[in-house]
Each structure stands twice: as C-alpha cells, then as structure tokens.
Length: 417
Image 1 (cartoon, rainbow, N blue to C red):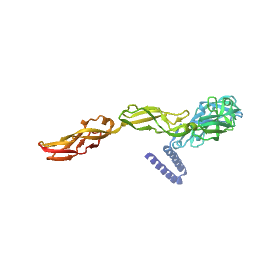
Image 2 (image 1 turned 90 degrees about the horizontal axis):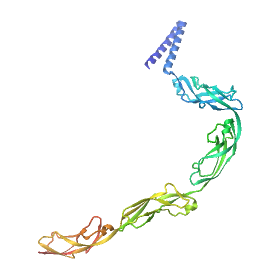
Image 3 (image 1 turned 90 degrees about the vertical axis):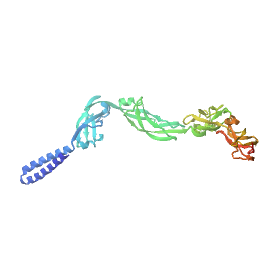
Image 4 (image 1 turned 180 degrees about the vertical axis):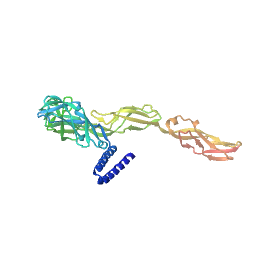
C-alpha cells in the first residue's frame, strides 16, 4: 500500500501545482490537470481493480413477444444461460440473479422450431456483459389449446393411527387446462396434494392445483381455476388405554426356596383398539413362564396375550424376571456343651451336659446343618472350687443367626482332683 499512498500524494501535489500554473499559463495548466485526472483513475483501478469472470448463477431464459395463440414448449439446454461479465471487485459481492434478465424474441418466428439468439440485459450501469453461454437456444412453438381435465385427490400422508377418512370430496371436480397442445395432451389429471399428517378432525380447505402426466410429473400449463375446495370427514376408529401387565407363572421352585418378587419391564403398556375390544380387557397376561425347581432368578422375554383387534404401541413383548431366593425358617439343634480354661488341678461336673440351640436362616442351609458345626462352650478360667450357674457361649456358621438356646444356664460344680 505504500506505493499507492505515495501516488496519491503525488496526484494531490500535481493538482495543487496545476492550479498555480493555471493562473499564469492556461495551456500548461490544462495539461497538468488532465495528467492528474489520468493518474487519479490509475489509482482508483489499483485500489478496486475490475474483474472479468462468469457469474456463478444460471439465468433463466424467458420468451417475449410470443405470437398470439402460440406457446413455447421447450428450450434447449434446460432454458438457462451463463453470463461472463466485467465489474469492479466490490460490485461482484452485490450481484444476484435478479440483476440479470435473459430473453428470446419470438416475434419473428414463423416455423414450429427455430434456433434463436439469447439477449441478456443487466440493470446495473457498473456491470458489462462480455459473453453469453450458450448464445442461442432451440425453441419449439406450438398452438395453445384448452381442455377440461378431472380434479383428483392425491393423499401424500394419511391420518394418524386410530383415525380413518370415511368420506372426501373435491369441488370443482373438473377444471380448464390451457397451454401448448403437447402439454395439454399429456395432462392426465389435475391433482390436489392432501397431507393429513397429525390431522384428527374433519376439515374443509382450498388447495392449489397441479397438472401432472400419467407418471406423476408436473406440467407447466395454465389451470382455471387454480384452486379447489376439499372436504374430508375423519372419524376415530381406535382408542388407547394403559393396562398393567400380569405375567403368567407356572410350577414350583425348588424345596427350600421361594419366589420373592416378580418384575416386569415395562410394567404398563398402551393398548390400541376399538372401544368394545378395550372394554373386554381388565389386565394383560403373557405367555407362561415356568419356574419348576428353580434355585436362582428366572428371566424371560415373553409375548403379551392380546385379544383380536388390539395392538400395542411398540413391542408386543415384555421382559419378566422372577426373583428366587432361599426360604427363611428356624431349626432346633442339640449341641453338647464343651468346657474350656479349667485349671489342671481341678475337675468340673456340668448339668445338663448339652443345650438345644434354636437357629434361623435360609432353609437349605439349616437343613444341611449338623451339630458339629455349632459350638456351645463354658469358659471356666479363674474358677475356684464351688458351684456356679453359667451361660454357655454359642458359636455359629456365618449363614445362620441365633434365636436362643435352652436351658439358658448350666450348673457347674468345680472341685479339687
């Protein structure tokens, strides 16, 4: 930018000098002024240089001066052209397709087909058209005709589940279609596109009409009138209610075990169907889940048993888990009382010599328990000869707990040997 700055300063100096000289010598002053102007334009071009390139958008070609009773039906190369233009750098960012207009003049067309030059105009004075591509297009001209075509309803999306269209009508049921003969001949019907997504009530509405051929392709013709009134009657056929799931379980778990709980995922389901079908349901059951001789949890994915005419939202299966755990109980075990800590110079007599221990815990553990696994001990440490009543210490395996023992005390007689 430094050279440009120096150049601007030079221009300003030349202008100032030109003014001074002009006061003394008119001819020399005019020459200086002209030189300054030239330099000024050079500076402007250097700061905002012109750019020549193709405009990035495609310009649609329009037919003008169409002979009466005729209509163009086809333009080669999709009816669009590209233009190469010249404009200053800052103008390019402002250009849009709306700044350009591409036309073909049909006023002199006397044959059914012709190749005509494309003319492109631009509304801006700071943009210059350099090139048009393609520069000409093929045009087919046909007579304009009018025919009556039926109006039909095209349901592009149906009513939501649980609702049904019972009646629909369109008015008018026929319209006038005008345009080139070939396009009018291709018109199979004029359609209303009806979208019933989420619609749960009857409706009446005006819709735009679209002419289409037998394959459903839209056609560029004139439709009179271009709208139609559609009336649709929608009724509710299905209702939705929520029911709990009561799984069906059969068989007996292994002896000493019990089914502690039953879990269902999901525990409730939404059932859809006619009112009379839903009224016949009190609870939902499932395929049978056997638990014969089970000693651990049983988990199954089972189907829901639904009456005819009923469906569920989502999967028709649920996951059922039957939790199996050991049953709890009690058991009495006779245990001999052991003596510990007695001085070697002493002897002891106990009465009674055993206790009945009451235990609680899982039945399978209690059933397998023997007296050897339980210890009833009397600690006679530091005792001297005499008679005592002592409670034994009871030691148990880890899976059971002590409820009590009988008798609660043992009579102990200590004497010298």
